[in-house]
Image 1 (cartoon, rainbow, N blue to C red):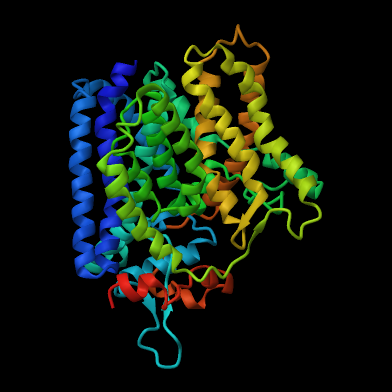
Image 2: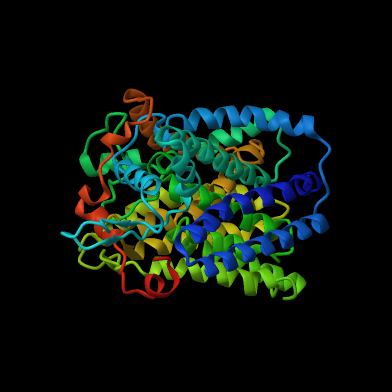
Length: 491
């Protein structure tokens, strides 16, 4: 099984590199002064050359095209249907967060880069827009040439490509002898994943919700989002976080030399800085496990210690130019009911999965390889709620994406890779938890079905960003006197 995985892994690494890296190059060309943009692009091309050389050393080309298509085609059909209800690209119902998404997307299409709103208005000071823009840039570039409709179509296709890459990593790292049917089952587990929010809702409101409600704010202060929730509300964070976590696990579990690994992390910063924080414990774990077995030689590579810092520092300077006009505190600060909600939240979102998994994972022969990932995931999910960043605590919601991705891999293994005879109690318990948890994402899909819309909203109906809620505007305001805008950015 591992030989087959290595056969397909090289191409998937290249696809992930290009997917995460292309928006960074577009950002460099659009935001940086020409000499810096040229140097940045050369750095990315050198990194690509190093990665191609590494894949030739560590992977063999696959000749099993028919077998590969037998897995990919059914999975892709399910994923396209799933994404077709997400609202991405205006295909399907768009939740309220899409007011800000569409506004940014429209500005990226119609305004010059770097994005400075109101630059020509003498009655208002210019608004320097600082946000993680990577998700939108390829489609926005198409929109500059072909218009709003084409841009939305490309955004849908771009997102679908990213989800297919992410699910491919999920199936590879799952490392089970999957038939096409079992692959579909694994993907359905991924799509269905969610916490026991319906129970939390009942405890908070003393009634059951109508399907179509957004169930996950019952805990008030924090949320671990179901996968469907992530897709329909925040794809700009989610897709890259899934891909990066899959790349991280794949390097470690299948002992791939991490010579280019740093660039994947650096590229992802412009996609989702909160998820980068959430993935760092797993990056450290992967590096430690590699060094214990193989030493430091492949870690201290040119890509990791020269190219990646250049890419990462550029994105960090841009993001650091934000005015940070949003709450930052400890999770319990000013919240007398924090501990009550925290304990219930941990029970319904974390313990219900880890208790049966503890018993189901005991029989996995490669426990030395996998066990540290399970416990690191648990540690991250326990610690995250102690911190707050953003008006809606985006730090917890988005920083948890990598740990939840890892958790889902173990859940899928527990359901598909363990024997019912060996686990007559815990396997049905885990299945029951997954089924109840699926109601969270199911409620999101019900709302999308009930309110389904197509085609995309007319561009004239999309508000200017500065007309949106004050919280949205405050979180994305840049400082024109920052080092980035004074020294690095184009005029």
